[in-house]
Length: 463
Image 1: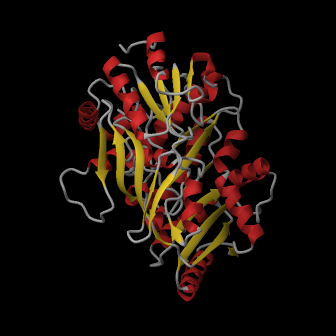
Image 2 (image 1 turned 180 degrees about the vertical axis):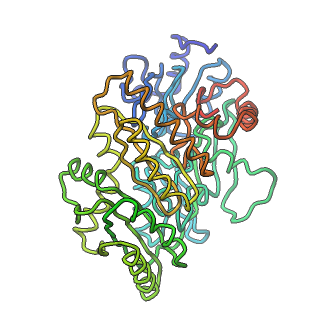
Image 3 (image 1 turned 90 degrees about the vertical axis):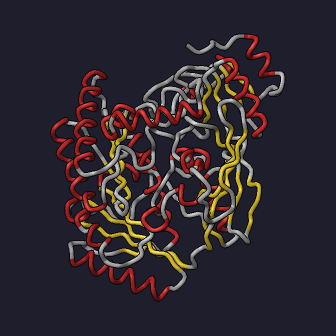
């Protein structure tokens, strides 16, 4: 059992956290009781906006000594309850730790605090002709949250995921000790890589307070194409052919017409084309426009040969805004189209993307649920949403449980995994157990115990 926060604890915390940065009980907004989807709601007893590693350390040590549960949170954009304080206690919010600390153009690294938003980081480096490739759809997420879930995004097919761009971390362990993992070096074979263990651990092992990130020179050119198809089958069946075409694509995104229509209605803006059942969005980038033209010509010809109706360049400012604003709004648009939803963030081998998306339509027929989808077809990470659409709560829960069981079972059959980039948190724990088995869960729990022997940090999550 954890210690229940009392007046003495609050008095101690207020002794070094000034008024305005510490809220207790009813002072805390309900927004901090849930994440983006709101599948579970529990408010912390104390919310603290931290400003430094040292503050985090002092809070953590006190919580550890007194066995008070503690959860770290950034923008709260996660979808699996990973930043919800299931046991109450203290919530550390890192949103005000939002400073860019150093840009090292010699080593091509940038050092940031965890509360820096992805969109702020990308804009900052691009103004300096540099490039931070990880590009998940939620641009208002914090870098700390991206690291905690090993976020991927649209450019992962060419550039990889967040883990590939984290060189070093400063973290605070549950006992309050401050540790520096990795650094600015490119290679490191010095014992176990604790840095990589922390990445993707969803705040269950430590609290990230600083990150050294790898940058690249900004590509000189970037070109996107939108390709419509008469049927969903034709659109997704072309993806393996694109991947075998020996071209270096930056992104291959799949989107269905119903998802696009939801985005149009949500944004109040028209998409360039809504006459067909499904679309593939391709992006190419590089420093040689002639090479890019050769690649997109080759891929466009292949797609038209395989059933694409046409190929539209996303080149004018108006078209860029309409396409990319719609793509960025898909999650919010689907959410706005129903009274409740849940998500299957499955990842499958690239060769099974088409099969899995087809299967989602079968599951929709079996369960009677509306199941829109979109995703990163180039790396097999699909975002599949189950919509309640005013069903009775008991009926919805039964149908959703059936759908999840079917979807995750098929993912396992295809050699896929429960989550591609959103993590496990609280909501997906049962499916992770079925995915990896008891022995791997035991190993994860053993690692958790080494980092956090009192289990005070983000309890009830992942394993």
